[in-house]
Image (cartoon, rainbow over all chains, first blue to last red; front, side):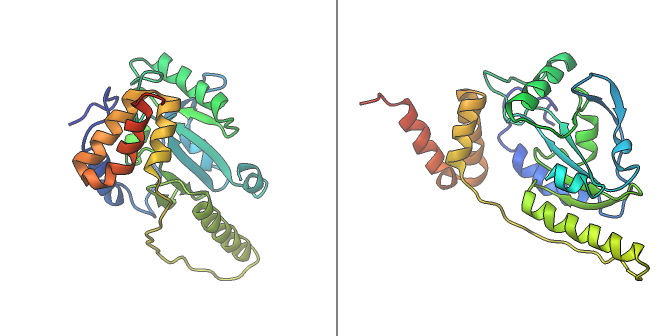
Length: 64
Length: 175
């Protein structure tokens, strides 16, 4: 099991996570919410606020 | 795109995760403060105007959605997942958003509509040389060597050859 914040890019990480993706969640299921920090003001916000009044597009990523 | 669809009632958010390819300039996150600083750097470097949301240090939200480095989701107004993609592709998102908004408008106009399920395997351009060039510029040489090693280990030397050749050329003397 690789550390979430791995220091070195794992040799096999790409393959295993991409293979597991289709079964991780399904269309039609409730979207997981959670608490995140908004980068500009540093305060906590609930992710579910994004889709409270209509559709929301979530993109995940990092600098690299 | 966020502005165009924002005017039609769609909200956008970018969720900052672990560093997929840690290196000299941006290493792996060891504290939340460091993660927040990196996220702010990314907003500036890539001129991100969507709300930038930083996941906790353990990546709780990122892991709940499948842990991939560049996923995209569309969540319906009621909180149900309507689209999930292993890769963010603007053209693909546009197609789906247009379809979602058209269905919404027709439903609102009183036309009976019923949902149907779709699965789709799409493709994006693959250029590993361009990718390692980006890694070298944005994070440093360690991310390049580790990525090339991973491609060689999982897909074989042939898959990694163009990137490996480019990297060796970078290291050889100029003349």
